[in-house]
Length: 173
Image (cartoon, rainbow, N blue to C red; front, top):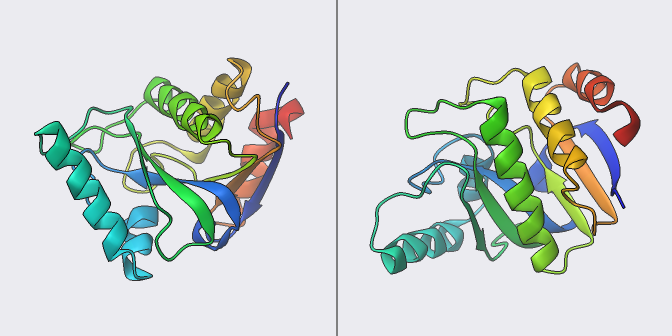
């Protein structure tokens, strides 16, 4: 069964959900975009968790497509799933974003989430258009991603992007 999908413009960091999916880079630095906003809101503990994760791996980076879960820090979520939908050079593709969304929603389900907020991955520092993101999301949903969720809230930054995402998602909304 598919989750109820809602799309709106706003700040994804303001959502009160079980799991917030956040943009992430391969070095897991909270340096810009959604993940930079977490740090600005007081997420130093979240950054420390991400650094601890890398230390446990014995590496300074993760692969594109990886997801890493931390506590919610200053946010009104149960947990944050950091989704790496870009390469180390901030390159991306619809296929990478689809794969990353599938992994992030699977992790949210593993955590027992019923509600998830998702930003437009790879559209800020990454090269995807909002339409490319929406097509990647539709592909992920078509693969059954998020099937155990009650609600998937897609939160885009600009008002003009919300109807574009809704149009691409068609029957999912």
